[in-house]
Length: 288
Image 1 (cartoon, rainbow, N blue to C red):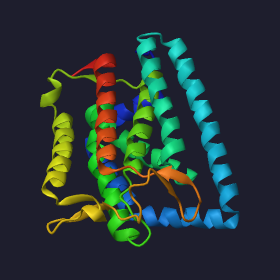
Image 2: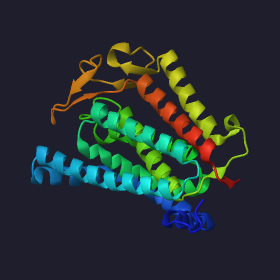
Image 3: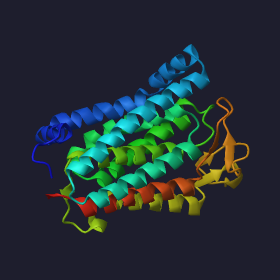
């Protein structure tokens, strides 16, 4: 696509030629995600307490807007310099930005949640050399995303987190997918896949995720709220006092936001993965 490989492309090629190093970095980073979460939360709390919540939220949002604006401008510039399938790329990029804006305004409790994008972009970049596919990278990262949220819900903050945060997983996927799409526009190449998509490991994994959710809901082992628990229920996703309310008010920040129901979260995850799967199929470049 580009005569001169970008820095991201060179890094991916290097990791492709050094699989063992790539694997070790990936395992190490997964360990950091699962075991270093509380450390970074405490740093965030200290930074917030050193100023105030309103100031902290404003600073975070200003930084996010500034960095996002620069990334968008750079991506549009790269679209201008490389006109191959530019309309398709622009359409998918605009779709990502549209969903991100909706997500931030509807599902965010506090602005610092944007850190999920940074956290899982790094994970996705370490996974990408094994797949050369945006959708496959996101789907293979999905078990780590779920494990991270389970760790927070059941182990780290069982008294604070009253619900399983599907919105965080959705943010992980759309944020990582958007950044990988931007890198693709800038010159990061995707691999052309010859297998029919329903034979691919990532599609099978996504199907199994949906199947497990469906069986869990149908059998009663998974319950959306405490009111729906049965004698065989093993896991409750939402323990809020009034989970049926569309808008919840955060006790600390005062933010009004929506808590995704399991069906909403699962459907959004599947749809976003399929969205990037379609993008992969359209713009794939390097023959497998």
